[in-house]
Each structure stands twice: as C-alpha cells, then as structure tokens.
Length: 134
Image (cartoon, rainbow, N blue to C red; front, side, top):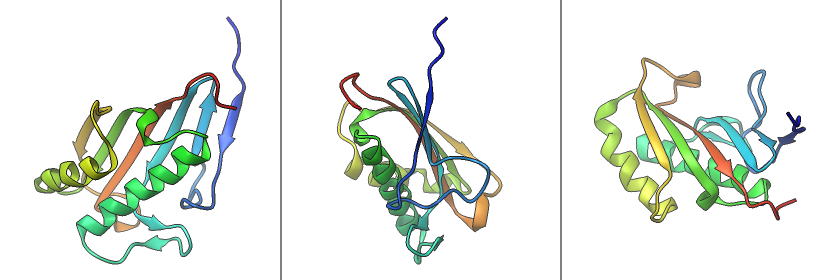
C-alpha cells in the first residue's frame, strides 16, 4: 500500500483554525476541508447579521479554502452542514444554489444543539481535484 503525504492547506482568505486542526488537508487528489463557522477572516469574529449572513459567510470561507487548493467549489463532492435550527434548512438551499450549479455535491444536513462561538450554521466539505493540480 502506497503511503500518501499530507499537505496542509492554509489561506488568510478564510478564518484561521481556532483549535487543534488545519483549515484543510490534501492527500493525493482528495482535500478534506474542516468545518467552517461564519467567522470573518480579518477579525476572527462572527459575521454581523442574521442566519443568511452567517450562511453566506460559511460558503465564502469554503470558497476561499477551495481556491487555496488550486480548485473551486465545483470540485466539492460531499458536504455536511450543521444547523442549530432545522426550520432554516430552506434558507441553506436558497443560498447554496448561489454558490453551486448542477450537478450538486452529495450532502447531509444535521440538526445540532449548538456550534462553536454561538454560530447557527457550520459546513465541512470533501473535494476531489484533478491530478493535474499541483
């Protein structure tokens, strides 16, 4: 079995890790993006505003990390989204449609009691890049 080296992905265009994790880790052509809460990268504070503002911010953060890998949101094959209020699920669909085109990635949405820093939404993703990316 061939061992793949891990490459740590880091960008200032997304929030720095606030714990013992990396923004993303690439192994071969697969990139695992850590859960993103709606932190503004420049301030490391939750984005001001309501659930919509928080949801836009998490997708902006995911986009920045995806681009730091040399890829884009279209390379995401699987997402997991965590919500503290499942009644807001339709809002996630509305906003996600602004960032993704068909065919959409596979996705799971889970209701949770709470998220770090009082966020209402968090998302993590798995990307698969073409082998020609560095």
